[in-house]
Amino acid sequence: MAELGAVLLSSKILAVLLASLIRVANLGYYIYTIFKGQTKPHLYTWLGWGIIGLIIGIIQTLEGETYGALPAYTSAFTCFVRVILAIPYGEKNITMSDKVSLLGCLGSILIWLVTNEPLASVLLLTMIDIFAYYPTYRKTWSKPMEEPIFSHFLFGFTNTLTIFGLASITITTAAYPFGVAVASYGFVIYTLMRRKQLAMDGIEINKKEFHKNG
Image (cartoon, rainbow, N blue to C red; front, side):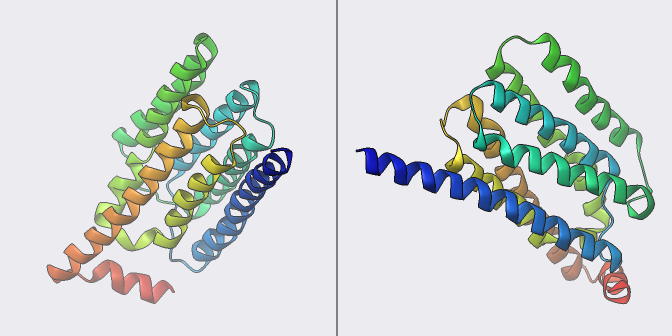
């Protein structure tokens, strides 16, 4: 039993380290696509994700996670790097709905501070994090070539790995990575379907711009 426990612990640590390393590598790939002119990150989406990812990492740490919280902190770091890059290179068309989405994410800090129940905080933060996807969803509807699908797939994959790497898999610790994984996979499907729809309608302008910038 002791040997089995050691193997399980090693596999969990490996999953956490792999998830964190992939997130850093994914950041490198994302930065590459930005400088190639292929990707225009939305400032509000990444700022919201960075804030919430940091809060989730703190909550997981307070819930007893040690190495299991590392992916959340890594995610927050990579999101904030994208925020910095989004200022000069990101999407410039900021709508009122985008601002409302960001205000909801910023309000999550206050919610976390006044809520004494970790599970309620995590579930609410998970919903707000998914809502933070809205500005990018809105942008992708008209510019589906400006988000790298592979990068978003990796977001989902690393969050799936994070679940397996948790020292204790509970609703409180697993709800956030599960929700983000589902949202990321959903975004990949949404983007592919939108690209296909535009191609079927004979609308090629974004695709041409994409190849021109690439």
